[in-house]
Length: 77
Image (tube, rainbow, N blue to C red; front, side):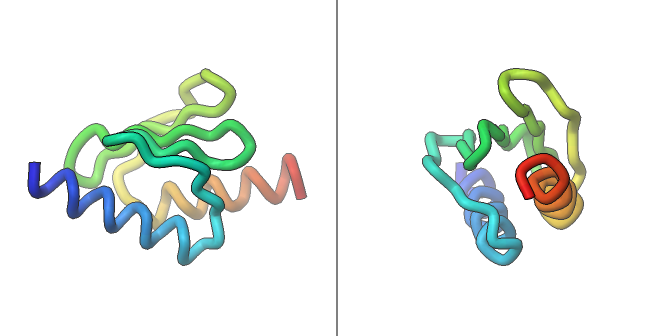
């Protein structure tokens, strides 16, 4: 359980660093603006969903945040 909290804190830090708005955190789920949802699946493993559809797995916070930031700029810019 302790490691989940650390991964959650690190993900939260990364999202804030990239100025990605978090609407709500529920356990291992991060609800973001524009209908993005991140699920923490394990150590450095995250599943990204957008509008209910799986976008893909990500093996790190940095690559996840960079993808979300670029997708937001392209689609909602």
